Length: 168
Image (cartoon, rainbow, N blue to C red; front, side, top):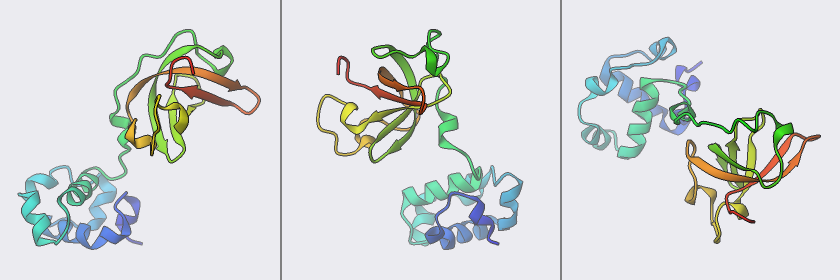
């Protein structure tokens, strides 16, 4: 029912997002037509607006970016990685292989890395660094290009275990 439901704006921030749209003179229904590309020009100072709306500046920036281009996937902004030509499918992977990949998702237990085969591999939190890691986001972010080594390949279950610690 609410056009903001088709965005990544959190429902707790709908009031702020609605106020931003009102200040720009744009109806929420316009979001389905590709967003408001010139929203920043229409708004003026983000810090002043954040103060007026009693909202954090970083939160407001996130909301404005989403209203500018609703439904964008931040992973689309990641640089293109040149994958290994020796690994075109999961069948080409062998333990010990060194590969370059792109972090596609960061979760509490590790990071999923695209190494150029159909299935992303998992770097478990314990294999992200040669030290204690409290949370994977302390080491990697979505879009990072990383060097990984194949630890284990389960072809039947289509699972790839990777490490970012050489020789581990």
